[in-house]
Length: 187
Image (cartoon, rainbow, N blue to C red; front, top):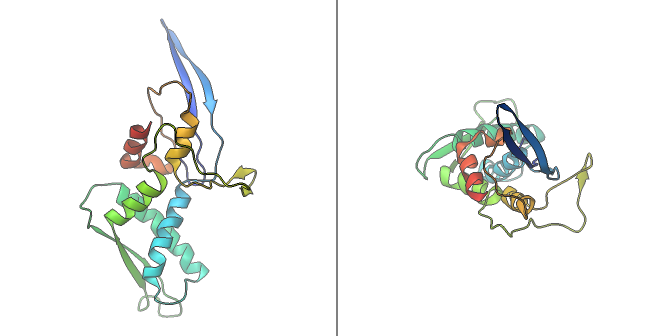
């Protein structure tokens, strides 16, 4: 689960007496446009109405908010704390009064975790499948994920596959121990 895409691979490892093990790729999933960037955007949508009483953000403010949400995601998922712990996001206001007009908003750890864990890494059963649209939008030949639940895409990939004995995490979104634990539980 990287910044912009997710994909899964399954390998078989066979040890050989006194020799290097043999690694064989058993399966590779589709690459879908679903990753940490989507989580950052979802967090930005959570904060946007709290930052603006009326109207929306300028494109520059939106870009700043998304960048702040990326840092907030890493901070919130990087540690433990009480559910009511507040996380703040501040962005520059429009106009020349940069500091006097700073826009700030807060969300609790519970809100942030619910959005990320329930929206992108919800509990999934082995038989779950991702929701699909009839006509998928594509960029650079990769399909956008209609379903934001990484865990349902993973369940679909693992269907009828051998049991998983070990997991190698790769991608910036999976630096979080909390997300790693969630995925291991799901697998």
